[in-house]
Image 1 (cartoon, rainbow, N blue to C red):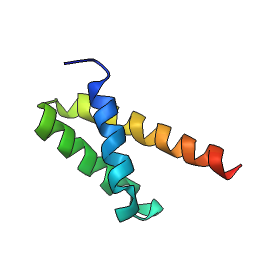
Image 2: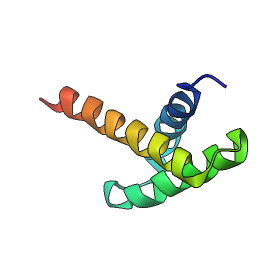
Image 3: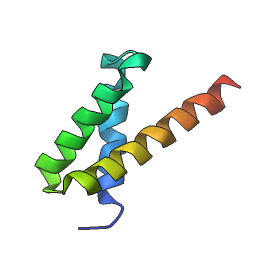
Length: 68
């Protein structure tokens, strides 16, 4: 597995599903992403959490850039 694959997959998951969650619901979105990564890539919870949180942070940073 490519070392970037979990984060790329997490980014795709978050982009696809973030519209289903209010901004105050970000923990649920991240947890869904973690579960998805653990299931589809057989990642440990720790590795999936790191990938999901990084992907979420990058997504939020991108959104913030567009708002400025």
